[in-house]
Length: 367
Image (cartoon, rainbow, N blue to C red; front, top):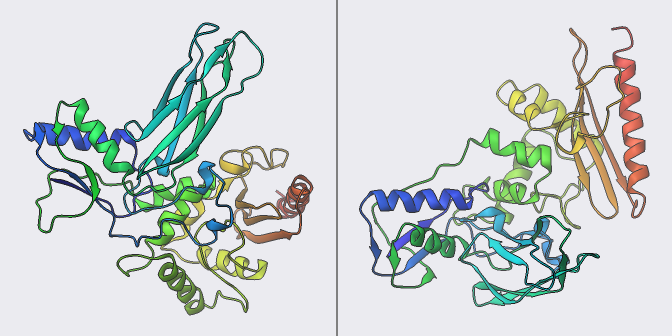
């Protein structure tokens, strides 16, 4: 047997699995006379983060489940490439080796794309039903969907990767472990400070939930234990307000409760912490420059002075961060939270941007 063991890296991709297979090949491995065992014990068996069950029929990638060993953010991506009218389109899934395909997508002679993709569990694999058509005039199309049960996903990708190097696997892909087995190959993620770029600047919910789960020393790690660790740290540093609730790491759905005052206290604490300030600031989006703020705050007299994190739910909008001050002056920390704004998100964002812009222009008016 060969064992794949994960410890919560949110950034593992297909190419990384290929490199593990290459390392086995370079060690002289030509056959696995047994199973591929996937060890997910670093996390508990609850792959759905708290509150994510509120939208069980949502297959979009932002609602992806988590697992100690995850690949491609526990999502599958269908790629559709049109051919000649009347012929089947070229389709493929990434990562390979995990999706069983039924049906096809035809190429139409112009018109709108009507690609249909329905996913359902097929044991611990996925079954995809493809229907509809893609216009011959269309370019490459991609559709990302979450995996329902991700526990064996990396194992099937590993089996495919081994096959690319001519390494035959005689057994199956299963959950399991072998005690005291020697390490034959390993992949290390980038430093946490780098991983936080995806979380902070791009508001990546999967990264948030994966990193959140690793904040506890409890093994297997649970979301409840992680929430307890975060709550304890907030209380220890006098950053918690009455009524604050932390349940998940992303803030998705109806779960967490925070106040604008507690957010400002947290921002002030992080700015004054010399051991964390630089890394914390660098993962925030820069107004008018990158991340979720790339298209906002472009009209300020001074550019790149707004550093903030956005938040978006169906009925809630938030913007929290700093307006950096001129030389000799510290930043202004702010936290703006809107509730009950379903269908009014554009106006709420405009109001938040206007308020922050007024503060920014006032701070810099004499420079």
